[in-house]
Image (cartoon, rainbow, N blue to C red; front, side, top):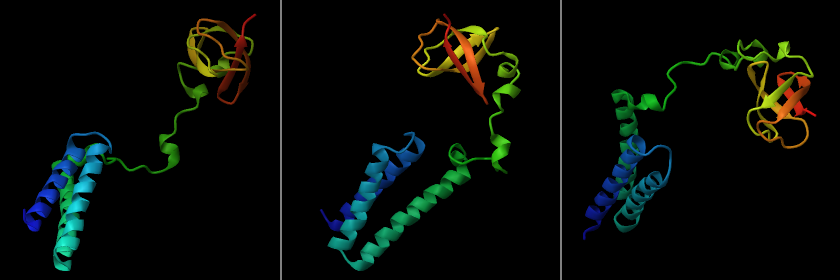
Length: 166
């Protein structure tokens, strides 16, 4: 087989793998690695087996094809899955509200010593139910199995520490 034909085939297969990686396969994985390998082999063989002009041409063609695929993604709207649509103004605009400000779980109104039950295993953190409210809790000490009665021993900021109820 002639080298220009082999290089064209390698570049074509590399672009197919690149398009599969972008449109079909989520994340970066083996398909993306194969795309890089085939495109790189095509450029390598163009530099080694042909001439510098071929090497430059194939390298530029592969770079250009990647940029064109990005432009196509943007124009067709397929890039919207990968690009954030809104502009984030500052860090505070997207912070999670403090648990004491959450309407369904207000640890500020649950006093220390309140008894409840561990809904999940606490290793050391998990979920507990106190006075009908589900709260994120932290075991103060050892591992606590779910459905074990617990009591609140201290609250530090938004962290609620519990121990097994005796």
